[in-house]
Image 1 (tube, helix red, strand yellow):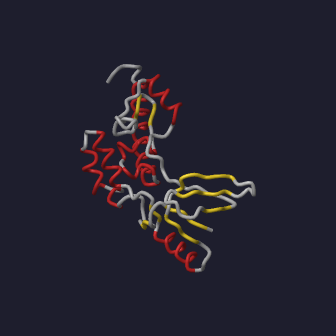
Image 2: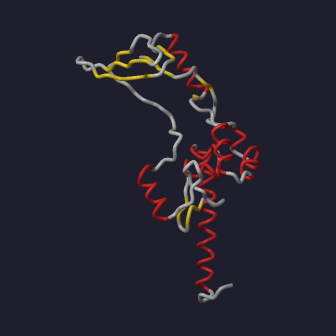
Image 3: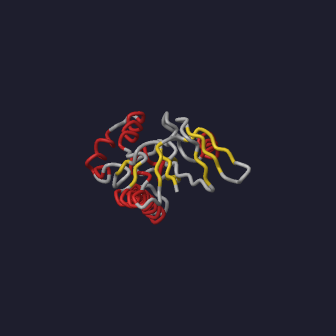
Length: 197
């Protein structure tokens, strides 16, 4: 088995500094009003292409046991051979790799998820987006009335942890609080006979 990587192993416990989980970095991030600056902070804060320390230990054991070979290179082209094998031509012009199977783990794409259907929704509903294409949402993660976002779509508000379980928890807390408050206001309004209070 061969592990083909663009760079040497990068070891990080989390995909960003633990300071992003709480107020250590979040406070300063929330004070940035420029979405280009927020995007730059997110890109800088991410530990891209990294693996947790326990995975590094397992990989090193597999290498030492001869069960895994590691090559640092990038694939330029791939061909399906008559034998059914897959040949990978590498960008560094080193010896091509041949394999029965190729498994890809490319990480997160830097562009906004959602593709064409989200592009159409943004246009049709006139949803606000930053220059990077990601949603401009309020502190409750509301993009427009009745539409809340989380995950990558919330990262300009949540920060670099938006894509992981910590970000999911933070987003869920904000959305639950916002929708509970709206429901309470709506119920109170109806209880008052539709009169404004």
